[in-house]
Image 1: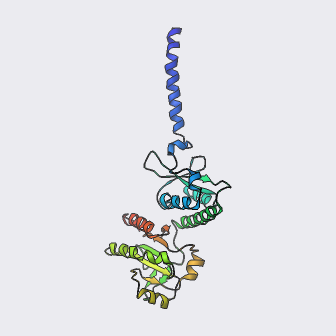
Image 2: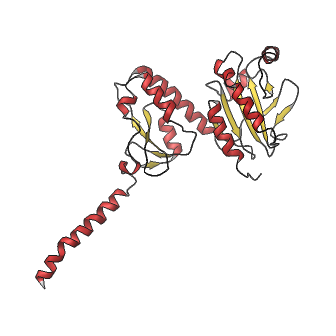
Image 3: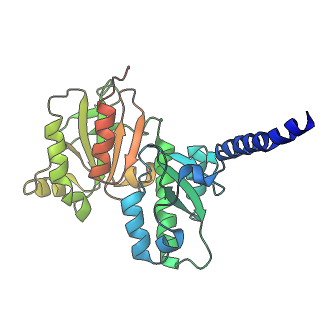
Length: 272
């Protein structure tokens, strides 16, 4: 009997070892569960161009993702964004085994280029500012365009509102207008989607600009104080999508991101 038991021990030990391995692999803190980084952090942070190319290609915080702390454990998105806003961390994208997207906080070393640190901190603070607006009404939502039409929470009740913040001298703001005109045309049969732009410039300056540049959004003039002081807009262009309940869905910085957010929101059947 003793010999029989002894012969069975290796098999039992193997099963227990495999069980422990499986359980350990399933822990939320196991970085391997979320794959490897799309690029090595030291390469990303090696120069400003490397950092910029990485951020442009891989960092899309306006889409759905799972947030990870520096140890590789999942964390609340709000806490992740707050940590990121300090400028002390890089959002490191990981190649996952499933279809989910993961971003992990990676603490910057003191040796990281000062230009990278400065740009990353400003970008991260802006992202956090945008994030904090989500799910809330937009303050001061009461505008009149240069043709005298009023836009407010009552006139736009039950509609998706797409806002663009810009000014005439902003080259990126102007360059994206043809793409935005196509977006307006694509949604022309949707009575529940309204496009509107708020500009820093005077009515006279805007009318002169619009006489030579085609832009199919209605335009509200003289919004510099409102945008810079009340809304604390830090970059131009800025786009905001507001849902049918009057709450901010997302705040993004260019047309491509806006199109993604609007298409996703317009596909929903939002109850008022």
